[in-house]
Length: 244
Ligand SMILES: [Mg+2]
Image (cartoon, helix red, strand yellow):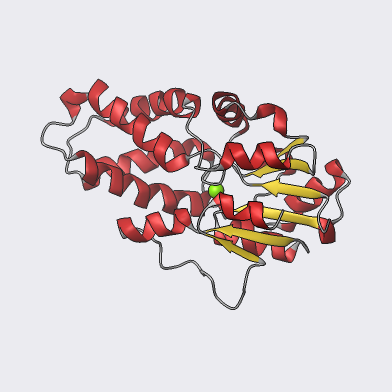
C-alpha cells in the first residue's frame, strides 16, 4: 500500500461542522427567541458563516486569540441582523453555543463507513486547529474517538495548520513518514497547502468550500486552488474508498 498513515482534519471533514452548527444555532435561536424578534434565521445563519470564516482566518494567522474569536463572530453576526443587543448577550450566547454545539453527533456523510474501512488497515490520526477542550466532545458525540492513534492539537504544537511545525509534531508523535502519509481536509490553505508543504499527499474535500460559495461568504482575500493540484479532489468522503 502506498500509505501507512492517514491524517484527518476534524471540523468539516469528519465531524459535520455545518450541520451541527445549524442545529446548535437553531436551538439557541429558539432558546433566546426574545432577543431575535424580526430576525430571519437563514440570514443569521449566513452572516454567522461569513464572520466565523473570517475570524478563523484571523485566528489561524495569530491575529486574535480564541476568546475574542468566540465572541466577536456573534457580535458581528448580531450587528448584521440589526439587533439591539446588550453587550453581555453575545458573550452569553457564545458560551451557550460552546456548550451545545460540540456535543452534537452528526458526522459528515460517509465518515463512519470510511473510518471503519480504514481502521486496522492504516494508522489514522487527527490534526486539528480546533480547541482542545471541545474537540474531545465532538469525537465522543460522533462515536469515533477510538479510531484514532493520535490527535494532534495546534494548541499543543504552538502553531496552527498550515504551519509546518504542527505537521512536524504529527510526524514525530506518530513516527509517520510524510512520503507515505495522506492528509484529508476541507480547508484549502490549512489542510491542503499545509500538507503539501510538509511533504504529504493531500485529499481535498470540497463540500465546505461549496457551501461557502452557496452562502456567498467565501472570503476573497485567501488564495484558493491557485497553482496547485491536490493529489485527490473529493466531492464526498466515499470517493476515498476507491483509492485507499
Ligand atoms: Mg476543517
